[in-house]
Image (cartoon, rainbow, N blue to C red; front, side, top):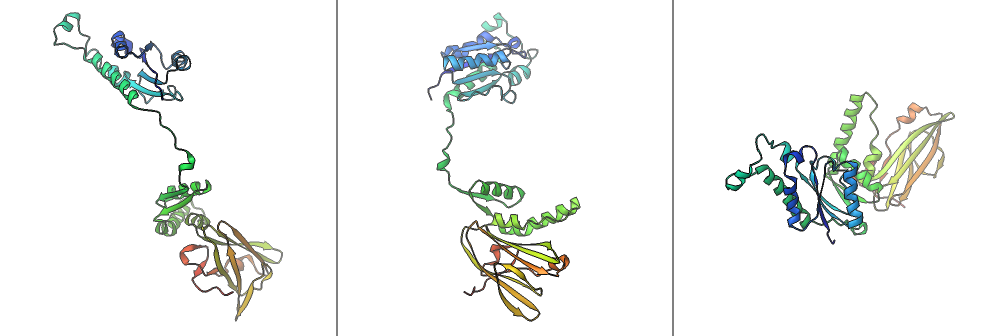
Length: 327
């Protein structure tokens, strides 16, 4: 960056009354840096003065001596320019009143004992601001393609899970440290506590947990259908690998119009309905069947679904059994 410097001094807010502005202007002038003053630099005219120099003179390295950088930070923001704020108002004039730090007389200037400490303070701050902009350069942003597509989230609390979900939506591969203990044990307790405080039903966080953990989600829903109910089973693979397993739905009720058709094994009063599934990463599958003459209450009390062939830690929404999946 080929720097072109300029200094702007605001004389408003009592700065011009307390300081010798001509002497202050001498600081940048000694270094060959142009300097301009204005009585209301943060106003429209003052800002236009700076913008005009940027456009017409190519100024790109700016020192603004006036109020604190904590205020008017949006006013003194100029794209493509290095800007430093020298705080003459709060750190010099307002905090060092002339009643305590009086202007020295001409006679006192000659004795070598008395000095205008307030003027010296302002000039020193201005010198530091000028040196600062000389030493720094505009930051150059990294190119997106240089970033890894993997993100590590430390902690599986509410903030960590939110960050992980947002990153996953943006297409990043997310890893959460210490996730098992926090997400599987503590998060459900938080959900229970919140539901108690708000006097509302406990939310089902199983889909969120499965998505964040990169697990297999198995979710069964019940809907009324004529004289019975319709059962819908959704299976979604949030992991990065193919999952091959057997899904068992064991209960005493008759199953009709199943899609896809399961293998059925009689277990006395119960029947084990088995689907052998291969679910690709990021893919989902749906299973649907009807149970005639079964009430909603009976349907909601069905035993848990069982996933055979996947480690327990990789399954949410069903029991997992690490067994051999028959062909």
